[in-house]
Amino acid sequence: SADGPLSTLSFEALPTRPKPAGNNFDARDFLFNKYNFSYAVSAFSLLNPFNKADSTAEKKQVYFSAPGFDDGLKDDYKRYVTSHRQLPDNEYLSYLYQPFMLQLGSQLAGKWKVREEMGRHATESDFKSGAPGNNIVQVGSHAILNDIDPMRSCLVFAKELTTDKDANDGYLYSSEIYNQKINADLVILTACETGGGLYKEGEGMMSLSYSF
Image: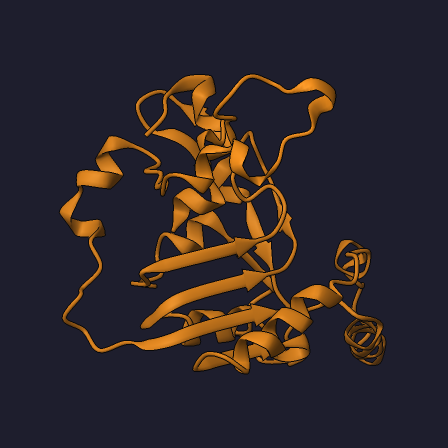
């Protein structure tokens, strides 16, 4: 668990020898080719027995969620808000299309036992109900960083087009993640700024990844 500014450094990307002429590093020049790295966000999270996954519980394999944010997803949302006379979430409509996330989900399904939720099915409600109890959980989406109030940082999921008053808003905040019992061996967040946040002395970087 690195402290202070060192918490932003990827130690596995450090070179193993002085910089060669012309910056021509090859694949053998970095620490990740020689060693396995694991990071703890803080000493407390590493030693806290309440954070240990239950290795005796039977688990499924992989849960994968990726909204993709293609035009079809956004068009469905625009039609919904128009027909229900609601104001649209323009930030949601501005998110870039992520075709590689959708391709990754299909590739994983061909090699692993995967529960894949993509496009309009990749909702916050589905994540909350489907992610717990899997060995590996991966979310491929966009994220919103709030480095003033880390509990307001969030992952973005597909909008739930329903009038159900209990429906989620599609933004999974750090404060909500703390209340989830994911119990996975590995969580992969494929989204920008999930490792950033507010640095707190003795705790490390209060990021979205810290919430898990």
